[in-house]
Length: 250
Ligand SMILES: [Zn+2]
Image (tube, rainbow, N blue to C red; front, side, top):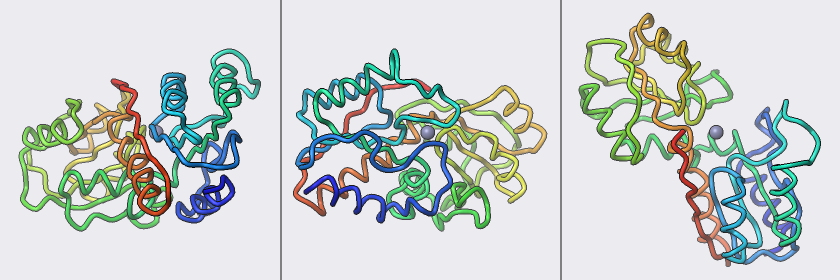
């Protein structure tokens, strides 16, 4: 397919215009006009770009692209080397941030809920652009069992803050660095909140709000959406797709 067709399809499918974001969503660096091979990955780091070059990619699709609000606007150093590699190899770079967290079918939150077997999963209405999700476990589960479930699904041991003694039934979650939504999860009466990262203050919040907190990994909770997007594109169009996981302990 052409770059123009892919750009139009993605922007529409991911409902880009519905989000107010910290980085531009869509085509960030322009490459060749015809696209046959796509590579997906969480972050547009040098290792991902190098692997995409080896795989003869025509386009790279990521959750964490370039040009974040607040970062230096000049193209030097590490940023230069990444962009130079893309341009020299004529590779398109697409970045989709919040639209890929919130997508109702294959977003990070929808996919995480599905992977954990959470039932009646849906965004909490009116909160943070629909990015905080809630649902319940089929049967209440001890915090230790739930921690083991996260470990098994994400292949990464979560950091657990013990907020209450009760078993876990109602759960809220938001992929990535969304630990500060713990207040909202507690207000909604949830037994546990899951996000990717943790701050020093999160420990006290969990204790004082009486809610279990699980830091399950920013990278680990955000692998789902971009991979599912690549698989979706390969099933809809004549594209070869490779998901490349560049490990990250955070
Ligand atoms: Zn993220």
